[in-house]
Length: 451
Image 1: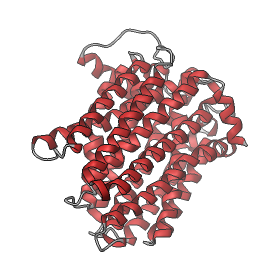
Image 2: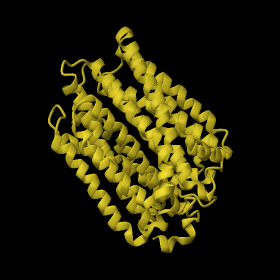
Image 3: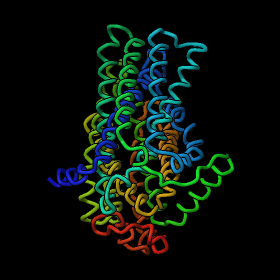
Image 4: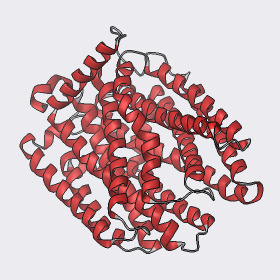
């Protein structure tokens, strides 16, 4: 009932409704494309699945944008975020269709493979760019005291889209791959991705050009001005202590989830299905990601009430302790039910932490810097996930089974909770509640106190 009331309150905003649909269609397309990429790169008969392979795939699809994204972020603060979203979806449609032609035509070697990899890289990297723009524009679609509620609803819609898109793509791979061949199944997956990106672009055209911001201002046109804009955004972020403390917590959470993803993929591939049955391994991994995705989605129901009841600062601390316990106990038992249970808890609690962090960042960053800061945030998010997968590749054995590693990272979450509690104590609880009903004031007018 609480979730329904919050959604009903937000749903009265037309631009919020449309933004929700854009993210739902777009992230459904992302989920479809990600499963297509994993099917092609990790679960083809000729592929070798290892923690290093998982880290390589994550690096391929996230690091290029993570390195150049902050330099592109200034455009989110200078040009219409609505127009950028439409342009990005149009490019992703084109990339999807090229992948359909290459994979469906069995052109997956030599020069064709280079083109195919490049198309995957562009399509999945652009996902993070458009999400940063939509996140930056979210605050303009709701009232000042609705930041926490909006930040809890929107991350719920995203994972739901990923579940729908990824689940549909997984079904295509499992049902069509055995009959018509892996390449045909993968090509159909990217057809579905193109359709979903098209729906996202068409929905975004219904949002007014200026509704998502930024506020009218001068456009930066040279690389020097872009670099200066990035430096200004970093300085602004550094001056807002609550925001960078929250981002530090989010980095730890994503490192842990990156490690967990790599471990789960390798464990299912080489320990739980030792016969080498690709279909069984893919089905098991698909179930784990589905349950974890459901946890992500349900975070929208629990995160806001917890934030309102405990306060954002206390909520972050409690959630980190829960993650520590889950990773150290069920997460260290290499049995399907306990692995799936931990996947659900880590998805639910990890995304709940992100909702609190998003709320803090939105409330403490001036609108003129939001696009750049959220792209920097996104780069940190991606880099942390890849770092987690690299740590897994360095520490885990070939079959992925290591109780000391999994239990040890539970201890890291506990240390993060202690560190955040100590580092944020002097700021006080009220500072972290900016943008919630408990403290709806804009942080823009309280930057000195907040910083």
